[in-house]
Amino acid sequence: MTPTGLTCTWTPSDEGTAHVSVAGDLEFATTGKLLRLVTDRLAGHPGVREVRLDCGEIGFCDSSALSELMKVLRIVTDAGARLHLDNRQPALERLLTRTGTAAYVTGEAADSRARRDS
Image 1 (cartoon, rainbow, N blue to C red):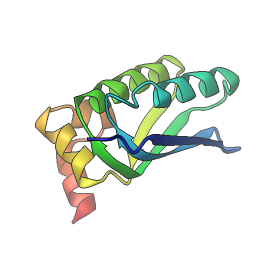
Image 2: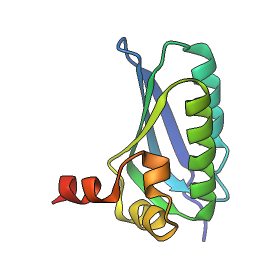
Image 3: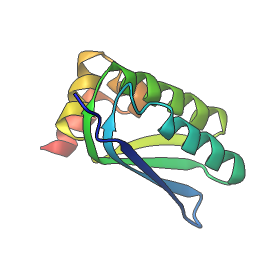
Image 4: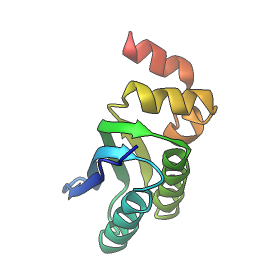
């Protein structure tokens, strides 16, 4: 499989929330890019209290994606902020569900996600 690449864009807002758009395949060949962006930008924006990852354009994701998200969660939490995974596509949702990490990574209970999606 040839990776399509990954594009990550950070947009801070005045309310202490940073929006990160993630587009492409989050996999072994692209891991590190998202983590570097979040790490670098959080260091330059100490007032950020929420990081909202827009996952609507993520295509393929493998176990490396999960590892990357866990590292991002750690960086965000260590900065005193909260991570949100918005617009999760089926592939990412399956990965989080199958590995039993959905509640840990997202901070959501599984039943609250099911209610919101219905």
